[in-house]
Every structure is written in C-alpha cells, then in structure tokens.
Image (cartoon, one colour):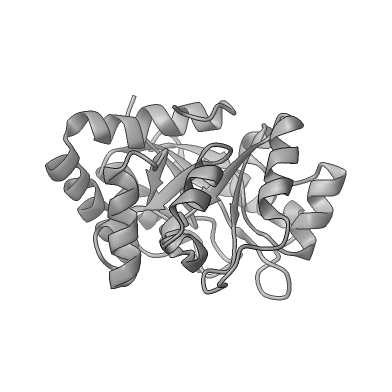
Length: 238
C-alpha cells in the first residue's frame, strides 16, 4: 500500500512551497522514493498572506496530477489557518477538506500563549456536524507545550499530525522534544512531511528513520499508513 502524506506543499506557484512545476515533480519523486505512494497537496489558506483562489488551486492540482501519472496518487486539500476566513467557511460549510470529505487540515499561530478564543468548543461543534478536524504540527503550539490536560482534550476530538522534520530535530529544540514526546506517548495520530522543498523531504526521511529505530516498524505503519488512511476516510484513529 505504501505511506500516505497528509500534509505537503507540492502544488507549484500558490504559496511558500514549490515555486514551479519542475520543483513540484522533483518533490513528488523524492517523496515516492522514501515510500509515499499517496500525497495530499495542502496549499496554505491564510488571510492576507497566502490565500490562492480555490479555482486556481484546482486547476494547478489537475495539471500536476496529469504530469505525475503513476508515480504517486495525489489528493487535494488545504492547510487552513484558524482565522476570520476559516471561521466564515466553518459557518457556511465551505472549509477546503481532504477530497471534499469530512476531514480538514488546520493550523493556528504557533507563538500564541493561548489557543484562539472558543477553539475547543468550535472543534466540538464541527465534530457533532460530522467533520474531522486535523491539527497540523501540534508540536509547534506553545499553548500546548506544558498543558497536558488541554493537549489530551484536543487529542480526543481532532487528529494530531506531527511534522517529520520536527521529529528529526530541524524545527527547533523545543518543537523537536514535543514532537517526539507526542509520538512516544501515543498522542500522534499520524506524521507527515509538510514538505515545502526537496530538502524537507530528506528531513522527513530522517524523521521516519527515528520512528523506526525508537518505536519500531509497527509504529511506522500506524503513523504513515493506517492512521492517515483512517483520517482520509473521516475517522479519528484510536
């Protein structure tokens, strides 16, 4: 079956990821070389910075899918910043999600001392509506670093997807420590490349190697295959 990457910026010319089609193909080929057979393209949706038109995203995705061919299977989603644009979309049911299904990827500002006002309650309402919130790189959020109760509360209602680059130690000392702790404590539902460049793919490979060495092959399967596939199906992995 191969690995599933739930978080990448392989779509070219849309955000701070691949700048052109050639780089997109190089990144996809590099991801395939380390075991990813399915890759989710998750361009940023971030107000006032990276907010590419959804039609442009779809056209770029279609063009890249044709170029990729049998190298890997691509899925379309987005990395939604928890901001005013996201809030509006959550109200009218138009959050860009994985393949138009119930699961959607979101992020918050990493340096905030507190989570956005009402975030946990909003997440609960979304789950009641049949949605599956998927938190990108929970290891980045300072509000969770020393609050185990809040971490576990969020973990019970949304999927945690840890960055492999953080596991490998490239995203900061504290972030790396938290990423590894989430894995060791069984709180990560999946891991992903969050690749913006070819170098990020090499770092992701190091993160996979760390998981295999420290947690064993069963953890690799759970975090890179079984868990991501459940999330794509709209199910929160146990």
